Image (cartoon, each protein chain N blue to C red):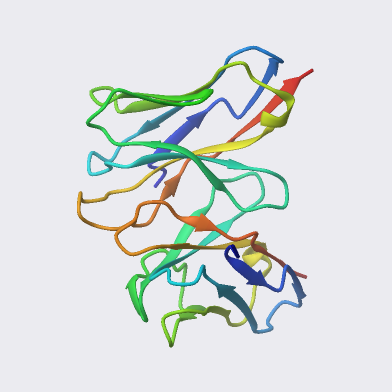
Length: 113
Length: 116
């Protein structure tokens, strides 16, 4: 069956630009997570959705980062006024309701020049 | 604040040997401890997970040992194979018995190389 998909796989942008990263979770999964993974580090939590609402956005580093999940399925992570320090792999994961395992996508590698 | 510390950063083991990776945590609210395996260019994939009500869990060649009083847990890979060469992450999450998954706090990762 289809796993979590993320698009684009790679995104190169210039400092100050706006970017959108998309996540398609596994069909039927109610929980969706965004993590950021810097080179040589473990994933770092950003935000978690249960259905359409953000259940925990405590990991978003500042107000340049925003995520939506309007219909409880696809999610978009939006980064305004990108900075070089935003360069990382952005991972999305999904989980069935009341389940423990999080299934990760392949990630989007964001490079800010 | 780093809440999960993982060691070693890198590990080289001969084929057939035992690979051991250790993690320690600080937050006593953590009650779900998974290990993830990640290959280059791929997302992390769950290997095995444990809750603190047991001290050990084994699945095939992979075993988690858990020491609640010391707030430490470890991954043992028996009969290590070249295909096990990957980066391994421990993680922890606060999670009630009847709740779904919550945010994971990851360790820094261990790059494991199995020499043939």
